[in-house]
Amino acid sequence: MNIFDNIKSLLGGNITIHQEFINKVIKEAIADNKVLRGIVLSVNEGFLNAAVEILAGETPVSLSLDLSLGKYEFNRTNRIIELILIRPVTIQVFGVNIKTKLAAEIDRPAALNAGAPTGLIDMFSYLAINEDRFVLDFNKMPGFNQALQNKLGFLLNNLEITKLELQNENIVIQPSIKFF
Image (cartoon, rainbow, N blue to C red; front, side, top):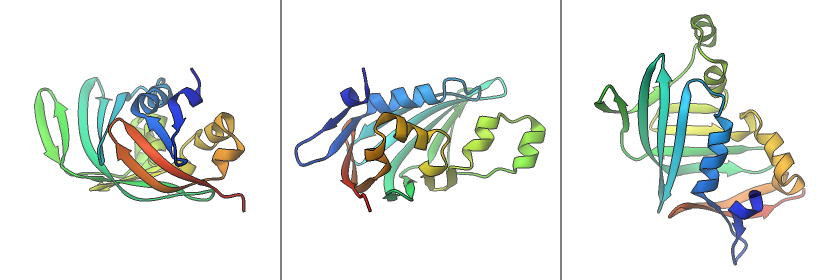
């Protein structure tokens, strides 16, 4: 199965990406991560749910986030997507459900000194978590630009997203290719 089996062109020039493909890519991307045990995205009408499992030392912790799309800019120079929390994050540890806002920042030297996994430390170079907003900068994400080049090369390098929608089980992209 290749990328074209999971990304379908629709009438009107839209590209639809099924949540199954997104979850497969995420699973492959975190396969060697010792902290992230799993991330599963469910795309619904107008929002998405992220179920995240992490290991804090030897303790499994589950997070559930319901997010909507905020601002986004996706072109040749900027590839940033903002996700907005639509309800408090649910953190489950030892059978206790904690509902809260979430913010995260890193003190890189302290994290390195404490033995934090490099992947976790590096995550903060492309992910900002500020109480009700998650901002992903795909240009800073390791391997993303290489994946663009390897999968669809020139076309994706020049892709602009003019409209982005969350529909049941699918992310729908209205693309534009800009060569200049």
